[in-house]
Image 1 (cartoon, each protein chain N blue to C red):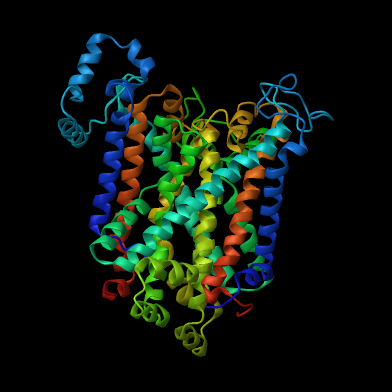
Image 2: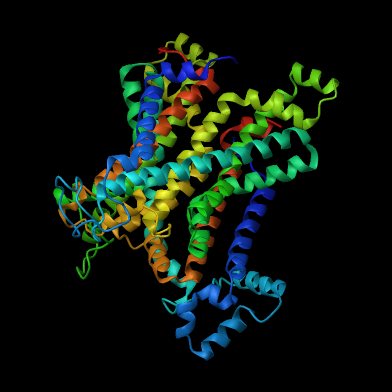
Length: 323
Length: 281
């Protein structure tokens, strides 16, 4: 799989996401307002709010008009109304999004870089003790669900060693600013980022190692050796650089995994991002927010995949000539 | 490509280790009722007891025996895993092989759908759907299978396309064999190791997602699951209970997934001969 998907693929994926989001609540038994908001919320609603919501989502109209109203709403940035938070869904999600972006971004970068470096070193020493130990070790780590890794880190570093804070993203009411605030944020994100990074290290590592092994058999490596280049130059500049390419194509797919991983890890550390939000709205059965989170996450993963597909031919000119 | 899959897995240390772990989990799942006196769903003693001779791993917040839950959790994981593995493998074969053999518009449509599903993050879809329909074991298996056959279908299609061009398939075409016959007699048997690798991928993903859903609290509450145990134990992480409650469940889940990863890694080296053999550098 080279990650070369056409625009049509993304179009279809987008359509599937929208359709799921639109039809799922409306396929449920009972009236759609009840399905969208759950029966408990419906009992507590005032009649005025009910009529407002029915008009807003065009729920008294035929299905295709509802779909039209839904799509039109999306383009205005209207993801619905959260009954639990009593605020627009978009606002609720945007409030927790920065924290998730921070954690996901850092661990995606860290795990990709570490994975590539370890993969290059391991593939270079293929068959040696170091290589076998790294392979077995990283594949075992790959089996650890990210939330369990998070819990282990939390118990070891938080509860037993008391080195890291147990929960949250900031020390509450501390009134920190400047450098102290940055340090506080870093301290709080260290464990969640570590859990995600360790859990997602193996993907990049295995892929780089495999490519490295094939790459080292290529004629240009022999030429490089014959030229008398140093080991490190051959390892990183010749073989390593080329072994990075497949990793890049996978970034979009890994982003999907890291984001979903973050949903679980945030829950472990009570980190106030989208994952924690998802958990709370699942408990409260605040369906519009669940739907909003689904839409945002799915679409951002699609967008990154698409961007990678666009970038890839620029990084590897062979791809654009491959047709 | 006649490399023996069995031999390959047996020769690799990693593959052997994986098989042993998996067998252990399977034995535990099958023999669960013999290894404990307690029903994992019933209160058997006071709540939050420490480990003792009667309750090896103590009891949870409602007085259920944790050791029994651990054993029966293996059943849930394996049932969901193997159920989804088999179903999604069948769907992969069905759509992958038929796309390759029929070709044309049908192939195009199937592959567009497959591509679309590959770029959508699966767990998020499962969370959304599960939030609405609160699936029981059976529905969960169906749901996960419906969302996880796509990657496999792409691989099967590629393999079937190359098998389609081989001599024995053309020969059987000239004898008037139907597409169905060719698919069943000539293509599917030759998919060999790919089937195993894709099957294990499916099992692994399903074990993972089941635990994740239970951890989030949208699994079937009547089902004893390692994910649910970790979720319950997490609420008491300020007590010392994590030693006999959280860690065993987490380790059991991780070991199962590690076992599957090891076996699939060994099987993968059959598919990619470049990864075989020893010591180069």
